[in-house]
Length: 608
Image (cartoon, rainbow, N blue to C red; front, side, top):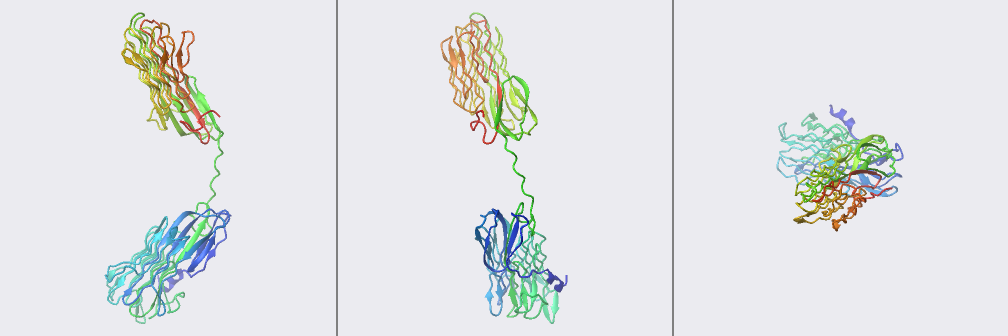
C-alpha cells in the first residue's frame, strides 16, 4: 500500500488504561507508557493471564548497525490475591539522536522477570559480517517469540530493524545490502503473529514492525527495500506489524510520535510495540525503537495466545460441580446373574470380585483307595473409579462354589465373578480337585487383563491326594495383594501355608474322617484388605484354616455341624477310606462401594 496510507495502521502512544469489567470477575488492564507501575487485583480475581512486549532498541552509526526487535512473552493462570498490588514494568524504547545514545530497549514484565517478560531488543552480538544477526529480545513465559535480528550495514548501506516477537514465533529479521538495489540479506516476515523485518536503503531504512497485545493474529509482512526516492532520498517501505501491532513509519526529526513522509535527516521509528530501530549511516537521521507494553486480562475461559483475548471478551462460567453422591454399597452373594442400578449422582464405583472355590475330589475306593485332591481357591480382583451412569443398570455375576466329587469322581471348578463383563473386572474360580491325582486343583486368578483391574491375587492350590492316606486340603481364597495359602498333602508331606496380602490360609489334610467333607481352605472377606489367613491345624477330626481379610474360617467338627468358608475357599478332598463326597468349594461374591474418598483395597471400605 502507499506509504502515507500505511501510516494509519500505526499505534498512537498511550498511557495505562483499564477497561470496565464485563462481569465481576472479567476485565483487563494495559500499560503502554514506559515506567514502573502497580496493579491491584480486583475483588474475586484469583488468577490472570499476561502478555509482555520488550521495547525495541535503536540503531547506531559509524558503523551502521540496526537493532533487534523486542521479545514477546505470555503466561496464563498466574495466581494473584484480590486486593494485593503487583509490580508492572514497561520497557523504555531505544533512541539514537544527536542528544541521546540509548541503543538497548528496556525489558517489560509482570511481578518480576522470572514470572513473565518480554526482553528488550538491542545491538548486542552484531558483527561486521554481512550475514551477522543479533540484538534479538528474548522472552519468559508459557509461550511467545524472540524479536527479529538487527544487522550490520556494509558499503554505505543502512540496515533495517528487526520485527517484534510473536505469540508463537519470532519477529522478522532486518535487511541489509549494498548501496544499490542488490540485496545481501532481504528482510523477512514475522512468524507466529510477530512483526516483519525492516528493509534497507542507502539513506533512510525502515524500522521493524511492532506486535499487538490483544492476542495472536496475522504475522507482519517484511518491508520492501529501496521502494521510494523523495528529493533524492532513497528509502525503504514500512515493515508490517504483526497481530494488529503498528507498522514501522517515518517522521520528522525530533517528532517521532507524528508520522510523516520520509525526509533527509528525519526519523525512522520501529512499530508499536517492540519494533527495532534502523541503523544510521554517517550522522544523518534519527533511529527509534517501538515502545514496550504489558497487558493483563482475567475472566472465565480467557487465555493467551488467542482465546477471548480482545477487550471485553469473557467465556461462560464453568458449570457447577455435580451433586455429590451419598456414600453407599451393595453386596451380592446370590449365585448367578443379577443387575445393579447406579443411584442418583453416582458416576463412578469401586468393586471387588471373588471367584468361587473349586470342589474337592472323592476317594477312588471306599476303603484304602487313593484319597481325593483338594480344590483350588478362588481368585480376587478389585478396581476403582469404574465409570457408571446414574439410573443405568449393570450386570453382576457371582460365581458358585464347585461341587465336591463323589466316590471316584473329581470335584468341579468354581464359577467366575465379574462386574459388567469380563473385560471390565473379573475373578475366576478355582479348579476342582481331580480324582486319583497327587496334584490339587489350581487356584483362580484376578484377571489383570481386565480394563479396570487395580489389584488382587490368585487362589491357593489344593493339596494333592495320597494312596492310603488323608485327602488333600483345600486352597485358600486369594488376597488383595497376594495369594491364598496352599492346601496340605499328607504323603509326602507338603505343609499348608498361610495366605498373603490378606488371602485365606490353606486347608489341612483330613484323615480318619469317613463322612462327607464339609471344610477346606480359608475364605476372604470383601470389606478390604485385612490380616492374612493362617494354615489349617488340628487333629484328624477337628481342623481349621483361618480366613484372610475378614472372611469366614473353615472348620470341621462333625458332619452335622459344617462351617462356611466364605468367600472363595477350595474344598478338601475325601479321605482314602471314605465313600463320602469331597468338600464343596465356597461361593464367590461381588461388592460395590461408592462415595468420596472410598476405594479398595483399604480406604474407607467398610459399610456406611
